[in-house]
Image 1: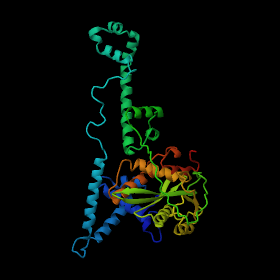
Image 2: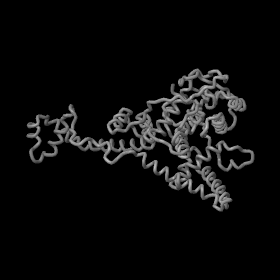
Image 3: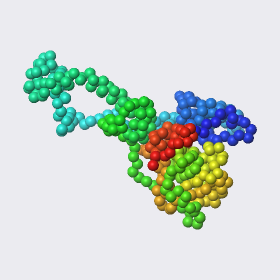
Image 4: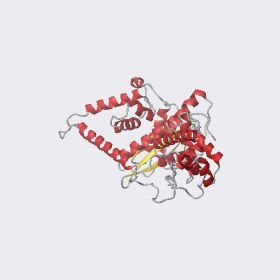
Length: 421
């Protein structure tokens, strides 16, 4: 994780690894909480220290206070910002409430349904009935009338306490599973829930987790539709494919990849998101969002990645599709400036940039599922939250179910961890 001492940011000549766009989004995330979350809690989500976030908030408060003088029309300069912030908080609260999307009683079983499905007529219900009425009729007589084994009934009664303990344990496991599933905003399926439970110290089998999730209707999200987003420039000269669909790397900052995706906002608007991913750790080390998709969008994302890696990235291979932004002369100049070698896949083949496509699939499944953004500000905040959660918290199957940040920390500590094939 690229953490820095916030006090060092003020030293002359030192360049912060965080872009202005990242700082702005981190501040928006903290302020959207309306004082209900601490600096440390928000900072942990975005991968920085609590003191760094505190310094950013104080500096921003100072700028706001300085800009709160009387404007030319006689109003305080900060009034408009405060009104916009209040509106965004109210809007986010409304979205959170509406996202539940369930009327009272929705999903309840139909009235008059059978207690047992065909094939469920096991002996345990009979033994339960015998146990409940043993004092009145006697166990021997009821076993004879119901034609069940008396020895089996006694064994079942003797195990009542153990079954109750197992059921209580299972109920607690289901409740914790629901919390993990809810914390991922409904995105996690059985494999990631299992990994999370194991990380919390539970000795549980993955088949048991799958069974409990299925029995209790806890289901991860799956996408079905795909959309083509690459618009190639026929006049541009593409770079060669240096990866050949081999999305593995032995060390950090050896191979990067990136792409652009479209986010619908309101009626007919679009917000464009460009990313840069370190192939070794799957971490999003650079991103940029804008309401346009000019070459500046991908250049800003690339420069954010360079800053996150300390400015020295000579020899890194950056792989992309053949979209007009990546084949532009401006992007080529930016790569040359940092010593980055360009690589490009074929036109119209998502497999040639599969890792970046996988990131967008996760984004749309986990942050945009059945959700519509009404404003650019709301979309930016939601996407920033997901990117930081993806980097610091989301468990990745190719990283031994570690998060990208955890994988980088262990990779740097041991120098021995490699990707799962």
